[in-house]
Length: 109
Image 1: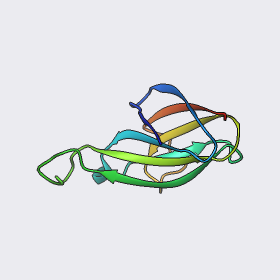
Image 2: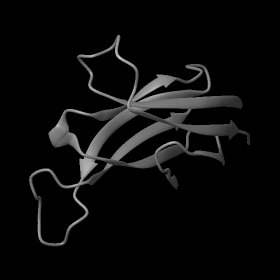
Image 3: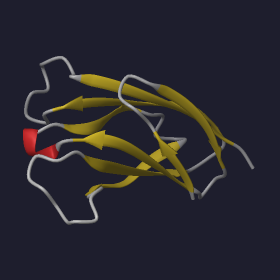
Image 4: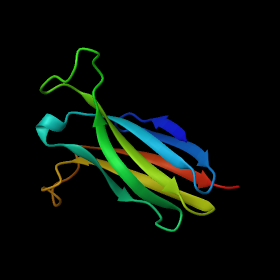
């Protein structure tokens, strides 16, 4: 598994092998209703596995605290794709995203 920590407004590059899971970590505050959404990725190259939130504090969850949103995607076949992520409220699809991030993934054996 490849783990990438992205920041809001940033971009990064990584490589993966077919079958490998790429874990993307981004800061989020889910209490506001915002979460990271995968806006674009070539479905022949990468597929969404799951997404979850992980608490950063050793003291346990805190209401309104920033957490890590973890998005796991699986490399399916050789190729290259840009995974475009938008930080938005899922029910406000027509509103502009509050932030973006981009991960360029090259899948090769």
